[in-house]
Amino acid sequence: MGDKFEWKDLGKFWDTLIATASERDNQKRKFKSSRYYNEKSHFIGLCGEMTYSIITGLKPDLTLRLLGDGGLDFPDTDVKATEYWKDPYLKENPDAAFVARFYVLVAIDTIQKRGRVCGWASRTDVQNAPLKNWGQGPRRSLHESCLRKTTKDDLRG
Figure 1 (tube, rainbow, N blue to C red):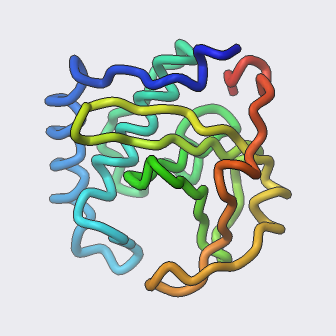
Figure 2: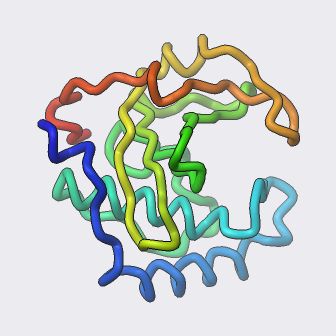
């Protein structure tokens, strides 16, 4: 299982991820429900989904959807990605619907164009995670060290 948690090269997908993120930004930037915690929210999220795709063999959904993905990036799974790869936290809004059974944290290194699965948490783990204010209001927050490293069916939702 060790290689599942090692860095994965995203270089060959980079241009596609940039273009797809740009389409999503253009479509959703003015939506009242859009939350931009940084200027690259869609791009970082797509990088996380692609990293998860690489290790599971599941195909990421790059379709531009007016209503979003409904909280599921893959079957039963919501991928959370962060650029803070040196000390990553899985973060979720406390008022989220918590649709997914599993939440997977992926750290993204945009300089080297790579991603790394940090671990996963159950819906209950995330719902019960402590609240931490990162500057945009409180978020349910789990440090990488609190995430499960077991296989979660070999990290395949």
